[in-house]
Length: 322
Image 1 (cartoon, rainbow, N blue to C red):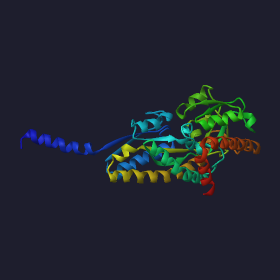
Image 2: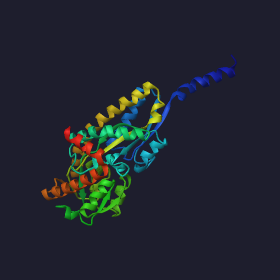
Image 3: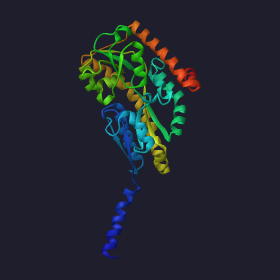
Image 4: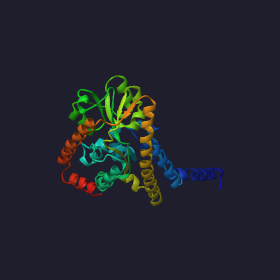
């Protein structure tokens, strides 16, 4: 064999593994240090190991590849093969996406998991129709109210500039008479620093991520709802994988879901402690504030059921039976 033939053969051998390797991009909206992002990084590492390097998934945290509202469309269109979305962000597209953003429908980890189990078959069907598949979903810690001044009742929220990040959080603002301002997680700290917003309803985790204690003094632990992030996959990209790699992705997804829910519970406890350590007053809502917010929840549930129709009623019925 000539030297040229040997070199060509060597080049082919070297290219072999590279040709067999598939690369996926995974856009995500939250900082690399957020527990969801850390879970994604572990998921990607698990897939790499289980597929013997055949599938490499690169996580692009903190909206560095696509902004939060763009991620679903990017995965649907194949610009990214896999992505993490906040389900409630897409409630205007389909009401069932917003079920876990309904205040006080599911207000604990156990009830949040029951709601997910009732919601999951509907999510799988809808995403399937859109050329997507649901890989796994993890709840955020329960949501509370952050404010600059003490809040004793919903009346104290009147006129306040309220950071909204979903249709549900914007509607809460409207119902209590606050001014909703849409700000994504990546721009939140700047919006507070410049006075664009002065209050919000979100989790302890986002409070620590965005250092809300630098701008806000009070956190009311209303445990209003546990919105979920979902990791979605482009179905054509998944179908193009060989069977063993598909199995590796599904197994890593199931592990990430279980690990994520456990991490969320721990993060909830840890982040509330961090808020306190940084000078924030963390307290339960007054009886009046809780009653006012539950009233908001009932109004929103009624509105949601009107929009969601029989599908929504079936979901709530299934949730209440579990």
